[in-house]
Amino acid sequence: MNPVLRREYLTALGLESWVVRGKSAQAAAPRELIAPVETPAARTRAAPPDPLSPQEAARPRDTGVSRGDSTAREAGFDWAELKARVAACTRCALCNTRTQTVFGVGSPTAQWLIVGEAPGADEDRQGEPFVGRAGQLLNSMLRAIGLAREQVYIANVLKCRPPGNRDPAAGEASECLPYLEQQIALLKPKIMLAVGRIASQNLLRTDLTLGRLRRQVHAFGASQVPLVVTYHPAYLLRTPADKRKAWEDLKFAREVCARV
Ligand code: SF4
Image 1 (cartoon, rainbow, N blue to C red):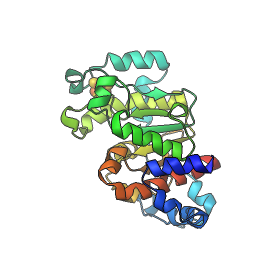
Image 2 (cartoon, rainbow, N blue to C red):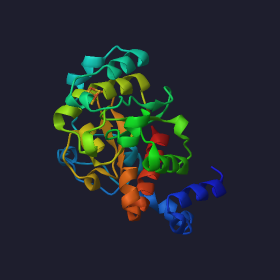
Image 3 (cartoon, rainbow, N blue to C red):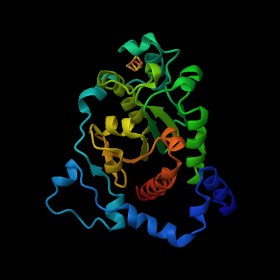
Image 4 (cartoon, rainbow, N blue to C red):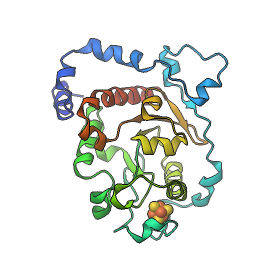
């Protein structure tokens, strides 16, 4: 990417002071990012390979998640059929309070799949994920790693807005996840980027904190799609000091994608 343009995007993220540190900081980042983080799956490994090896960092880590049980519910439906099924869905009580379902948006041939938690008020009104200020920040984050919004696919774990933007209930997430799983089966993304704690925990079926899930490559589902975790743009708007960590996550994900 044009360095001037890239700096403009990073400035939009509030990261201009970091960029001045130059190439040495960028070169050092991947090594810092692949410090071993103990997860349930990692704990079961008898002799883990060298975590400082770039090859090892890019290798998907199986978190023990098996999704063969629920994926079958929506298996076989194409994009149009799946979207119609979501629009008509009454599988949980959120159907009573939504303005409309928020299926997802983007290129059906995208290599990157961005997954958030659930629609908010703006998304519920417009029927598109990640609009409003959080959406604008997500767009800037993507542009910072050379991706236009139109080049990726963006979806949420839940297709309907929880009232008051509360966290999704466990039953709501489990009812809705098969839709996302079929989206993933149709898309066959090269990499998934889970944004925020709720999306990450639901996709990985864990209660580990976001801090424990960052900086490693997880593997999603039977197809073992590499999955990287980062902060939700709405959180970053409230906590701009963590934008640097998000930038590290994005660079890490880009490196992983390049190695897949
Ligand atoms: S949140 Fe998902 S499962 Fe619940 S009504 Fe909406 S589409 Fe159906």
